Length: 310
Image (tube, rainbow, N blue to C red):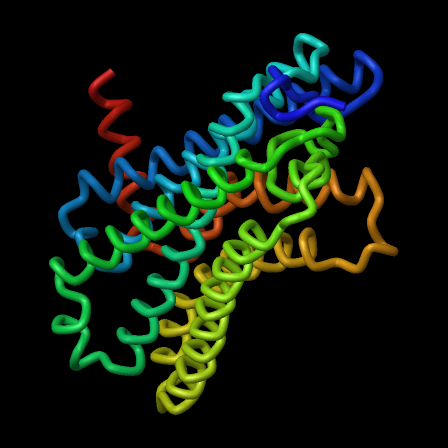
């Protein structure tokens, strides 16, 4: 029997058993991470440099791109390193840091998606009050609250998770550090504090989910009352990218954590974890840029200017 003070490292789940598959996974993760870095980097640069994009919608999109970059940089580099060098090790402090930053960036992303939903709701359902409800000061305060709330939540959950005594080995059934896998190693019978914090986090997440659903019900009702087909199409085109991103983020995360035990398997759990932690940061910039003409034009101008300077 060992406790957490004697554990110097954890063993993560290997993505593949054979060397060829390990190198293939390394190449796939490298391609996904480069796509995420390029896409989110272009969005951040386009919004920061394009003065006509200094609106609440693009301000929240810039923050979302930052959270996507942070999220994929938390899990993918270590997974790439382990695949390339055929290792599974992650240090105790490295695991704690990875868990904290993953909770921080994914929490911030969820809160920012909720704020973006509020932005769409106000722009379509209360357009006359848009400037009042979503002024620059109000947007800055809301974004700061999202980041601060995610930081506090991540700090409390990480500190409480790693304060539990661990005596069931050091092997994690995931390619990155996450709370359910660490709790499986705990020999403590008193999970009240940990589950209390998780319950608070789940309640807050559920409130955000209810708010998103309610906002979209009201939003679609308002859009369907628009008399002109062109007006309805324009309103839908501003909402669909956000709805697609929210659906991708929530559906994969909810199925990964709320699926019944009898459908669980190692390969399925691994595929789901990749879907909710690795794929969205790479797909989100593509989803937003496909439907948003202003953003596409700004990115095109940015890239044209870079090419001309070189």
